[in-house]
Image (tube, rainbow, N blue to C red):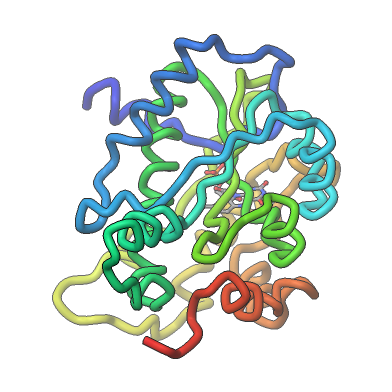
Length: 250
Ligand SMILES: Cc1cc2nc3c(=O)[nH]c(=O)nc-3n(C[C@H](O)[C@H](O)[C@H](O)COP(=O)(O)O)c2cc1C
């Protein structure tokens, strides 16, 4: 054990923040740590957008349907960014043909998420609270428009951050033997039986997000979510293609 590991094991998302901004030095160190994350082929194919405009925050909260998107003292959006490297190549008259390929999208997506998680780990080590916001992608086309994203840029994830004003329980994870495998993939043979005890544990977890704050069984939640996407999420591939990705040209 050390302090880093202890802090990581204490992780829980925070959805209520004190109305106090971070100092310039605190923000500076978080951005520095984010940038020091590993990056695929050293391409650094991501950007970090800090959302400070209250009107924009409001619109994002409308898309995400989560009040804390608007009220969080700091809101970042980590972007897949192949536009900058396209410009660099074009400035040298080098053909940039693969910037929208699935491979380049996925490696840039990995870059963006690794940078964001570096920021989360650093923030939590300082006692700050964070929550990722996939919900801002509920309406991907509108989001790209609101953020004025050019071609070859796409939002990977949002991250709200600030000093915590709640103290939620740590959320239990799946039993290790369910997610850990050796050498070859192992199918889950008896899903409900294997997860019975875990379901019980999750039903006993209190979620500070909702008034009716006991969670439903894990297996019930998963079954519901395997059936349908929020309406505009079905436009994800369209939105990606509009941004220049996954067009099947490369
Ligand atoms: C990619 C990603 C997107 C997420 N999006 C949201 C979100 O939109 N809103 C939210 O309240 N939590 C969001 N979360 C947080 C998860 O709900 C949370 O991590 C999970 O329930 C486990 O809880 P814990 O972080 O407290 O351990 C997201 C997490 C990830 C990794």
